[in-house]
Image (cartoon, rainbow, N blue to C red; front, top):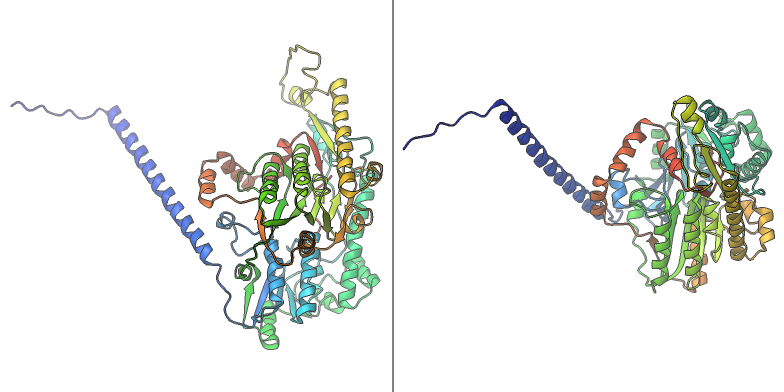
Length: 592
């Protein structure tokens, strides 16, 4: 039989076969790598479930770590996989302190602060009250140490039985200042114009002013000065009472920066002593009998929840108010999620009351309206108590105003009852700077009336003005109905103006000053129950499902890359894609 001789593959076929082999091998390796990653993540999830074990031993001090950032809600397993699993939610911090009051294993609290401790004034006030109540109720000691102290960090530490600072540290104690950044000249350089549209009475609704001015308007300056003065007066009174000083003495220290350096802080009686952290830990051991220090997040995991059939649903609304549904790994107040949460809580027969925990500067009008409607509907069957954290302003206040009761901290920023729209005009940017020209053909005279290539047509601008005026009236009507006020009365204290909780209670926007614990007790009382457990909403999705979704979401991957190289990219992306009509705080607040 004649044998056929195999011919060698040609160069092109050889290259094609090699390339195909590489592709197949890469695909197989990618699949294997992904499966290994899923396995490791599943293992991490399983181990995190197992980590909720009781704390053993005694003579324990709980560490309140102010170098960490605390979101309102307990981080779920998905979040902790990609973050710091040693940081619980702010609710865990409060729960740990409350439980520690009566736990014989816990001998005291250890507050650790750094110069970067940037907890908001609202959260700081709530945490400070919890620590003060811990001391008063249990008689157990609280010791504070800081490499340096931010102002909010020092305000918290001032309630401690003993305060210490690193010998080279500082106390950033100088009063509160608020800055607003303006972009008009920058936009002018690029021939970009911004049309700010707001109700004629909304002079305090100043968010859009950052694009059309180079300085504060008189109304904005008044409201900023009023609310930061309210916060500062409350803070100085609290510090003076705890440190055996007068308010005038506290203000003199701030004015002269005479307590800034560690030695000066001790001489001015802001701080008790200068020590290194190892020294303070030695004192904890020798003077207080401390055997070990445990984080509040670890301790919170060991707390056995109450098994009562009665439930109080806690719905968390934290972040910007936006339309739609969360993809499961972003922090914002998504209207569809909150609406669904209220529907689920209202239908659950075991849920006797609802607490809405709000920490939001506001946002989309349509999202706010959808949530407000859901709240008003749920209120017909169950009491709803709002617990305001640091911010519950504009749309954040609208979703709050129809609750049964509203609880806020004296330092909470709220109100800002108003609305605005900003319409950009970029035609000159394209024409003069980039040489791009636009030509248009229309069927109707206003088909091009809302085009960002040129100014709004008179008809289009009049329509937008009616739009903001109408929603402002609606907003005031919502508040009037929820707060039992006349619309004219609401308008007199609204106009987009920001208030602190301490001032808001005087004008009827808030019912009670206090924290999350006060809101829960009011909810229980309104529901007629004394024994209950809490359940959190919106419900968080399955971890593995969210992992697979994240793996497929190219938008998330791109945003992560851009966040790493462009400062404030997420903020800019939000503003670029936000809904046209906004009810939100007039500026970003960062006061430490």
